[in-house]
Image 1 (cartoon, rainbow, N blue to C red):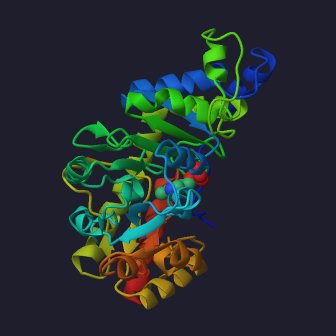
Image 2 (image 1 turned 180 degrees about the vertical axis):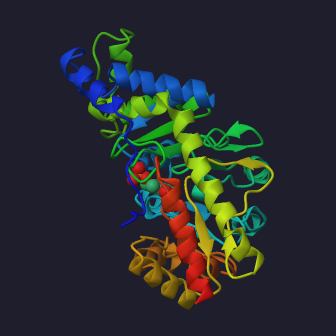
Length: 377
Ligand SMILES: *Cc1c(COP(=O)(O)O)cnc(C)c1O
């Protein structure tokens, strides 16, 4: 069986975990490995401040607290995304406004955002689907003009860029996931990027259960006390140790995934030329991290049959999101703004192919050949 995903493991992870337990004797949050990861993120991305969190979901919740989202505020986002993008803001009482995607990237259509803005709109939450950038120039221009906060759900987008600048560093906040399904992982984990310094101090307080413990740790206050709302938004040092091994080898992981992605693209080109399937398009303004390789069948029925055929060949290819506006919770916490021209239609045709660090070329070729066989028979 060719799985859809295998969590990335290089070997050094176990050594670092051992080191945190035995040498460092520090296994809670913000220990030596946590600090190394945070420094790596700040340096690599050029973000003002990075905080490691238990998940991208937790980082998104922190952005909702930092944005002071409250009952009656409206938050704009795509409907084609993971539930965490929406939950974080619905939990603070926001009403969600789902905007259609552009079919080429499956990202929020920056041209359709403006009509969704009202005097209650507080923030625009964008998702860089498959690690491919949204149109950041247009989105930041709109946000500036209407004085809105921008949150980049860059869960899938570490090591991707828009016009050469890392994703997650354009908005006021960016969030990253280190879940085992993502390119860089530690099982469960995430990061919050603070790109506007004004939020840095409060973010530390929210992360430390609403206390100024971070200042205390740095010797800036002689005891720590309750300052503000907060929760426990720290990543365990054991996870940070695992993660640091991957961040150190970020370029190697990227190169490996990109070569698999390019191999798929090359092997599937004839089917695309025959207009049997569509493959991913990367806009000129973007470089991507090969988080995902998806194809689009001509219809939802064809996707279903292809998926079943691939499963019979021992290949796990999987669909992705049910649009949030069609889900039970999505209907009660928000509504679609404008027409759903592409969200449902394109989502129903999309099929994600196996892609993970260390995937054999023979396996990639076998998946591509199986797709070809399906269309030939
Ligand atoms: C994976 C993912 C999340 C959630 O990440 P966790 O670290 O599992 O909380 C949120 N948004 C998007 C777009 C994702 O792909």
